[in-house]
Length: 467
Image (cartoon, rainbow, N blue to C red; front, top):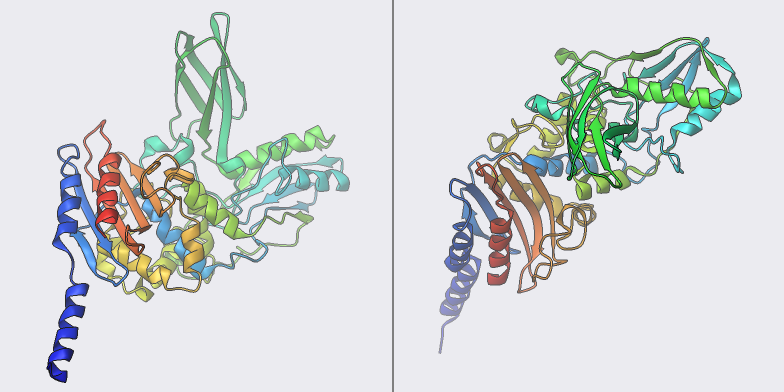
């Protein structure tokens, strides 16, 4: 007959065995990753429901996270901002004598679309038209945040595109211009916005292959390539001065309503001063308005940010986080992120951030740090709700085409990340046993022209099947 001491020792041994990682799991994962293009560098941690790291490949090595950076930003939004309350970031308009001032407060959803129903620039134009038939200057005021249009470490060649468009407290239509290119006989015709001067070098050909470029500081947008006969091509470009563009569009709407604009389109920016980071900046509060818009709850925008990996919206969230006890700079927002990371128990040496979207190549994080943060997040009262904002494998967002017809379809909630030479995925997934696994997987130094995502997906499927 066993003694009580032997029973206790045996039970303790069983518990230790159950809490130990299974070497076969990491072996299966490494076998999947070994099929990646030569030169790809991986970091991966998979933590099971008991808190055991079943996979730990380069767990403390720092990787470029790309759009995994939005995990930090949206988690800090949940921890800092009133996401379900009426959004206080709506744009407004006021009169200064004859001048009309369009004022931004950080809203990412302001729209000038013809079919706009909510958060519409036209609503503010209607308010001015009801007040006066003549205005002087039309001024775009984005001084709610300092003038930091791009983050440190973002490639200048991304500035002209929609994914690298400038950030501003006064943003319209995702700060994108939509152009159409169609073949009319032997000519390529460009339509849509005339905000930029168009240098049209497109030829009519047999394929649709239109490229564009705009040098920083220039108002000339050069289009090149070919367009085929037929419906044509839609081109979406970024805007360099969002406040100016919004004011330009506002002046156009006023004229359409019979309001005479006698002055010019102007802007009011607030220069960024690093010494102001960490403190409330005087003059950044909103004055009384003639009219002000009321966007929907901010939780809706956080969901869009994660599901669609919307860079501009993430950058605006970071600045809005920075307005809580600060002046709304990138540095102010990152101070809030740093406080959150400390609460989560993540070592400061395990991460560095320069933006809120992941476009900066200066960003770094270790797989273990990300899994530690995600584990902390799941324990928060809002943790499950935040998980719901992530793309779902084979279902929606940036994972809609991944994990289809696999055991992880509908069972993996994760944030993607892609930059040149970088692929990332981090979140949670349901294993074959039914337990929830928390993971972070990074591929850096991917050879040009190759993709690491099939290999990454195979590795995650292997881990889920083994656990």
